[in-house]
Image (tube, rainbow, N blue to C red; front, top):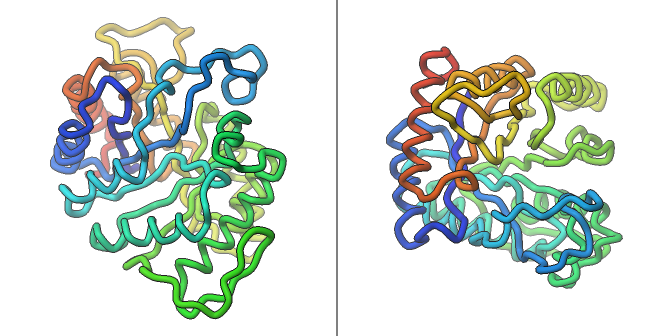
Amino acid sequence: MDFGLALPQGAHNDLRRDVTTVARQAEQAGFDSLWAYERVLFPVNPKQGLYGVEGLPWFPYYQDCADPLTVLTLSGAVTETIRLGTCVLIAPLHNKLLLARAVATLDQATGGGRVTLGLGGGWSTEEFAAAGADYGRRGKTFDEMLDALRALLGPNPVSYRDSQIVVDNALVNPKPAGDVPLVIGGGSPRAMRRIVEKGDGWMPVGVPPKVVADIWREILERAEIAGRDPGALRLVPLAGAVVVTDKPLGADRELFQGSPEQIMEDCAAYAGAGAHELIIGLDATVANAGEMMDKAMVLREAAMAAGLWKS
């Protein structure tokens, strides 16, 4: 199984230094990929709960989130081969043409074939309102975004039309130097349909390994029925807030919290569920980038000892 590392994006980091330092050290350590997520604002008095769950407080870490494509650009400029991805970009908040051009530029500038676009549908009505996006149409907009990216990142000339944009026999440049996989987040039936019909993989967050295994098996079966190659799809779970402790925690611990050995038990469970890659997120649970890399290296050693580290 591959291991990815989420980059520093929170307010406790020095973006001038920490992003590039972590990127270099992660590549030198043998991590397979670097990832950045997206939140565009933090309501002081939210009108809805976190993830749309009534009464659930927003995660304080979300108060400050550096722009993901900028963070990936910084990382790509100081590395050579480590893959770069979003986990996830909120698709309906973006202009389709401008996003395609930004992603293609990032891919070209970093050598080609390094970029993966993880995309989600979003859940915050206040983010949609601030971005001038229609929350009620987010599902349709997400579907169209996937179709638009395939067309806009594909060969010239481009002709594409949907409910929001028209491109009529035009040259759309730059183009990515390599393929840009579109990996889809979410757990709804509509998200599963997107993966089967339009995506290159699934990026679950906070879904227990056994549930992931069942859903992934269904996705692969449905993809084959739809005439797609199940072997081309990738399962990339995100462990968004890993807590590494010196001593083991009790049996009631949460996923990805505990000693390095306990966290490796969770990693192994996802590997057994079919995961091709696991993204380790530490930024939300550490004081600074130095502590992030210290804990990342501890987990690297634990993964090697457990036989999970592919390198």
